[in-house]
Amino acid sequence: MTMIDTYRADRHVFQPWGAQDGGARLEITDGAGCWFSDAGGTRYLDLASQLVYLNLGHRHPALIDAVHTQADRLCVVAPTFFNEVRDELAAALLDISGTGAGRVLFTNGGTEAVEHAVRMARGHTGRAKILAHYRSYHGATAAAISISGDPRRWPNEPGVPGVVHFSGPYTYRSDFDATDDATECERALRHLERTIEFEGPHTVAAVILESVVGTNGILVPPDGYLAGVRRLCDRHGIVLICDEVMSGFGRVGEWFAYQRWNVRPDLVTFAKGVTSGYVPLGGVIVAEHIVESFSATPFPGGSTYSGHPLACAVGVASVAQIAAGDLLTRARTLGATALAPGLRALQQRHPSIGDVRGAGLFWALELVTDRDTKQPLAPLLPGRGGTEAMAAVAQSLREHRVWPMIVANRIHLAPPLIVSDDEVEFALGALDHALDVADSYYRA
Image 1: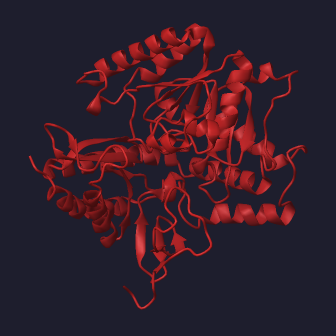
Image 2: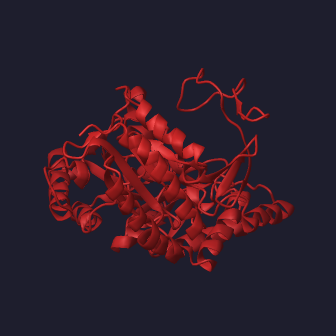
């Protein structure tokens, strides 16, 4: 402990996703680039981009300037008025999305984007059911948490009606007894096809999926999976919603992750990286044929702060900075030439790494106590105990000045897109030390 107490307990703030007597938390007072500092002055490499949104890093001058410039001109205007910067961002998003003509509905964040996308799909099709992966997270409000497959859904049930979950591809822990990606893809698509058949295609409004699954494992779908889902949706008149809240804006080396497979969704939800979190913003990119369903029929949704000009100004600056810095190429290159080989080299040295997977600057190390049985180092589901091993791994990373994202038995790596080669090497060195701790729990 430094002379300054770097941990403080909240006395007035009700904390989300946790018990209110959870104790003191690290106080963060400063950030610059890929690093942030605590109250004692200790710096940490932000390997999680906070909650996977800080794509352009802390204190980016162009984003700060965008806020100042827009605030000097117009801080806020209701969505009932035309606003130039709002329209400018919408045009930029339609351009980079590759979805063709359409429009953008702005929201305050990703959860609201999912809520409105589902509402659009139901209004467009006149159907009620929404199909979603079990290994997924789509947000915390009523519909979004019901659609989410992950265990955060459980204490919020019963949820909204009409949601059906199905298994997506995950070759390392296949639900389909597959041992390779091609077989996993084929069987996962057949499983979805049967699910649609059993539910009744005429009752299904949308299939929603994270183009690359985020907090449920950083699961990159095998080649052909998203295209296969697109074909099934087309066959039955079902809307395809790609949730790009976490994987969008360069995270996997494309503007949006679905572009890796040349798939065109009907609706795209976004948030997080669109502003690097500087000002909250989310939205839905709406294909033209969905827009047409509401050309004469009012859309039953919206929000007070839709297209907030401060947020949109930062969004315009963010898109410009990602393009100007060629950060999509940068993410692909670093992923292929630094993170992928570096993490696989760690896997060769550390038996506790069961699987390495990812793309761009979006990776996961799945830790196990036995590679043969794939016994996880920590429970895959909550409330099963055994989390002390991952806590020790996280503590080691923090001691080596790297701030990780730890989920279940995994270390997630999602640094800002501006991360340098040296910073990647620094992170890999810290991981090497932390994996020595994980290896001490290995029992095979």
